[in-house]
Length: 372
Figure 1 (tube, rainbow, N blue to C red):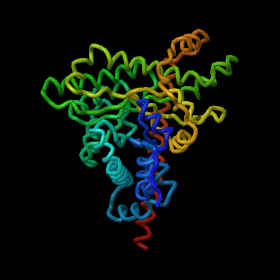
Figure 2: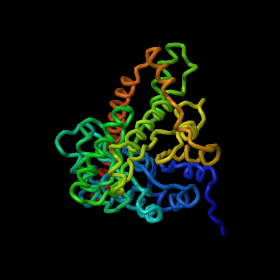
Figure 3: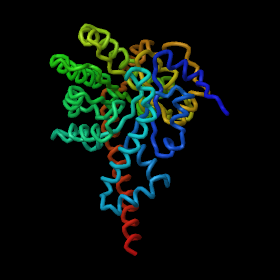
Figure 4: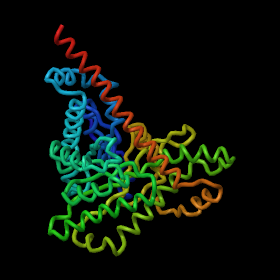
């Protein structure tokens, strides 16, 4: 009989203050016990999902074939089948992570489920409606609903926090936009505090990392400044962390903190390296620090378990000189991050569209087969 031994490298990262989450979900991952093993052995404290992850899980495996066929025969649409599957997977994952949530008094152990990506520019209230729907369907205190951190999403983030819904704010690239998201979170908590409601509502702000280097590195190559390659993304994230400390360790949040409100932790997303010349753990080892989360694809999580060599906080290094140098040679980080936001929204919309098309094909085949 094997004995579970927590991976020392990931345990060390956790001790520094960076919570290890997995950027993947899937039925076999849960039912085969792999997710539970990662919790036991890899200090795993959370799971994130998005349309691209569900597209891969549902269309690139046979785990869901029978379920899709059964739901199709019940007359469900492709979109309703997707929602049924997503809610079930996330509910199962919250059950696996619930002991973590219990052990840490509700401070971690969360699983995230995203509203439809086409709602990123929503001004009609559909975002909060879908957040409420998923919150009720999953019905787990360790659920987080993902809402894009666009200008249009800010009022929904505030309202959801006020209503006691845990929120994972996604698709953040800009430091200034991150600050707007933190403000929305604080406003939601201030409204709860004013109404005498408990402040045990949790949120993370998902700040995307590797895609910044993908874009900036191309611009640096055109300017023959490859000496700065692979540095912009880390500097951008460290600037966001500096803003986090200003906001949540400052006077504005002091009263809420004294009343028991948790900070909105920065979450480093898209931490798998895209450039094969970079270390697999580049965005793990350089972004370690208190009150943060790093959500890793499985490949990055395995690499961190095998090679991560973090001995202390690495987030506090001042990013200003590097960011100033990038600006001096004509790298406009504001434009880079705005373009990345638009591209990120489009990518998730495309993933969900592809997923629904795939489910529709399987649904139609099941109905045709039943009628044969």
